[in-house]
Image (cartoon, rainbow, N blue to C red; front, side):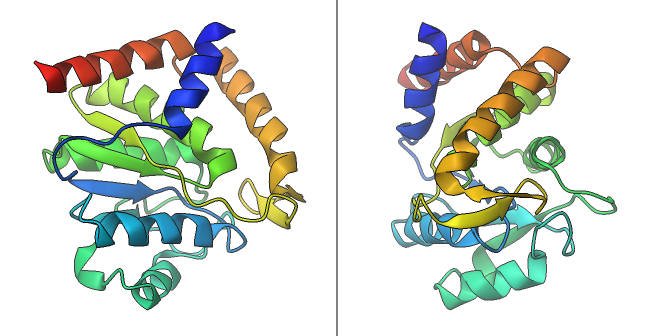
Length: 209
């Protein structure tokens, strides 16, 4: 239980690397929740905390409005096309957090990225980050991942989530996300909380050495 509480706190209040990160990946969100990650992307770029913003190259599916819609929306917020990079996930019939995480890690390894930021809507951030770390430990353990949640939007707002099939308030989605984490831990899709904490400690020790 202590590991879970520590991990959640660290995910929601993570540090960033002492150097400009190679990029920040925005996990796919529905139209209801995309503003959350757009606002964080805007801040990360404006403050020169990352070099580029990464998004899925998927067409509209599974609740994700698609790469073209996201490019236009980000450009409207000052995140120009020149700093947006697409992570290959097509062809695929569906888009989900695990598929995105695995595609992100493959892309980071192919491009020799060392420092990456993970951003999702706040209620989704814990699962997104644990999934990204799980994928990194499997395929690219030298990658340093950092958590930077999307901006909080109205918690009592009614929205859709989970491939656009689940409707609830953003506050109500917190419990469903916890249930998904428990389910995927049981299936072996995610590494344990203690393993993610160990990863974070090694990540930080590496930068201090």
